[in-house]
Structures are given as structure tokens and as C-alpha cells.
Amino acid sequence: MKVDGRLRFAAAAWQLAYLAVHTWWALGGAPRFLNGRESYFAGGWVPVILGVLAAAGCLLGAAAAGREVGDIGHWLLAGFNAGAGAALCVYSFLFPVIVVSLLFEGPQPGSVTSLLATGAGAVGGVLCLVIAADERRLAVHTCASCGRVHGRSPESRAEPAPGWAFGGAYLAVTGYAARMSVWLSDTIAGRWPSAEALASGLSWTAMVVFLVLMSLAGTLLPLALVHRWGRIWPSWSGPLRGRAVPRWLVLGPGLFVGASLTAYFGIAGMTAWIRGEFGGPFLPLLLEMGGYTLWGVGLLVAAVSYLASTRPPCRRTVTSRG
Image (cartoon, rainbow, N blue to C red; front, top):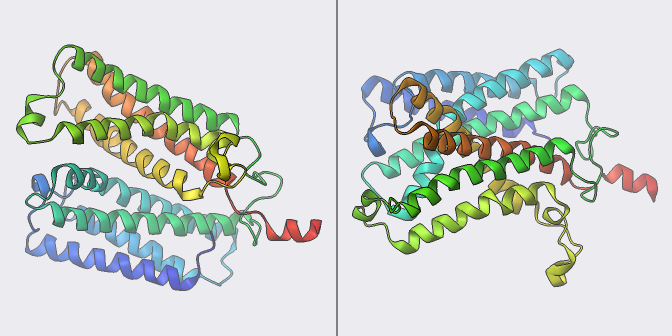
């Protein structure tokens, strides 16, 4: 994806707005957040520092747009923006949790403020990552028409996914199975649904819908990211057969769910467990936390392959063949 200077300046403006708001909160006191905090990690000046890094990365990227900075310069900008973007996304990892909470439990005190704050951080992180990806593209001299490195990148959707992508997809399925083994055990023992869930007014319909969506994200989604039928509609799909599956229909959920599970359980959850902030029987916790983590990481690995495999055809290649 080619990112022009205007988008880079817009990204810098977004980061500066995020920085200004969090500086104001750090100096004058933060508003009320859902569950009392914006992030699992420390607040205060931490998001301010992340905002400074993100704004600096976007401003440097904007200043470099259209200029000759050399391959090393592009790699440095890519690394800086990737680090800032990843840190901001991790800090804002509660965003998908708040979205799910609003969908299934409705508005609660502080939920809208938390949604806006974490959403702004997540968008800022993604903007940094987009700039990082563009700087990497410039560093490796990808095709100006399609973004591929011809000879190393998949040329069409029909090409099979690499082995490491299949490994990631089935790692995600394994992680889902590990997590659901704990749910099955709790259900058989009568511990699901919990008394807290029933007391909160959560309906059976909402719980069943959540389980169905969760199962699709743990089985159909990772397999669609690597199998041909996830890129090209198969023969049994009727009038759609042979056509390209809309890219973001599969890639969007893959990135969203993968990043959310990895950040929430793989980083924050595992850190809290190691610190002893919550406890319980070792094996169920290992299956639950480890399962979610493998699930998330596996989805991200498979999504990287899907991202490369579903690029639009190269116009230059098509023209030369014609």
C-alpha cells in the first residue's frame, strides 16, 4: 500500500490530538473510564510518552515523503513507526473488549469514554503501522504497480499458501480447541454459565450468539485464511464460484481477532498471571490463557500470508502478457 504525504500528515495530526488530550488528562485528571482505567497498563504519563513517539514517527515519515532518504533511512523509519505503532496498539488493547461489552451488555458508566480513548489509540497505532509498512515497501523496492517483490511474493490468489501459513492457521485451531476444552469441562460440571453472568442479566441468546461467533473465529476463520476457498469462492458456492472472495471479509476479522487475543491474553493476561494477580487451578488456566494466545498468534501469522496472497493482480505483468 502506497501512503502519500497527505495521509502521513493526517496521521501526524491524529497522533498530536491524541497526545494533547492525554497530556491534558495527565495534568488535570483523567475522566471516568469503564472499570476505572483506560488500559491494563499504567496510565498517567505512559500514553503521553506513547503519543510523543507515535507523533514523532508520523511527522518524520511525513517529512520524508517524496524525498531520497536511502534504504537505511527507510528501514529506520519503518522500525521506529512499527515499534511506536505496536506499543500504542498494545496499550489500547481493551478497545475490542469494550466493543464486545457494549454489544452484549449495553452502555455502562465510563464505557463511551473508554471506547473513544482506546479507539483513538488503536487507530493511531494502526496509522503508525501503515506508515511502517510503506517505509518497508520503499526499502525493499517493491513493484510500484502492485506492491509485490516479484519472484518472492505470490502472484495470484490461486497460488497455494506457504507451509508456515498453514502452521499458523492450525496453531490457531489448536489454541481454540484448548480454550474450548476448559469451557466443555465447566459446562459438564455445571459451572457455565457462571452465577455472575446470570446475575448481570446476560441473556442465554447473547451467550449462545457469542459462542457461535467464537467458534467461527476459531475454526472457519483460520482455515479460510490459508485454504483456496477463503480466497476464491468454491464450486459449491453457486453463482459466486470462481470469483474472488472480498479481501477484507476474511482479512479484517483475522487481523482484529488475532491482534485482540494476542494483546489481551498473550501480553496482558500472561503478564498478570506471572505477577500472581489472579490464580486458580494450573491446568485450566494454562489451557485457557495459552489457548487464547496460540489462537491469536496463529491468526496473525495466517493473516500475513492472506494479505500477500490477495493483492490485486499486477497491472504491469498483465500489460506485458497482453
